[in-house]
Length: 70
Image (tube, rainbow, N blue to C red; front, side, top):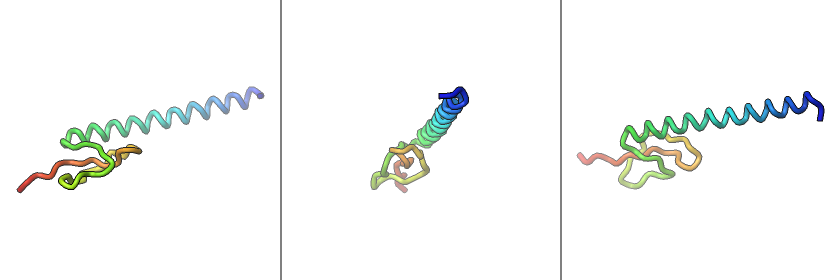
């Protein structure tokens, strides 16, 4: 491998890692917002819960919150 190809490979790998780190940071922030609303992140909300937002993680896309009785 020539020097330029090695540098290109390492720069590309670094950019991919940075993209993963910053996207994970956003998921953590959305999960914390869901917890502040007294919700939980889940794949599907239960029948007695309302969808109040999105956690947008791969396995837990919804933020669910218990319905308030009138």
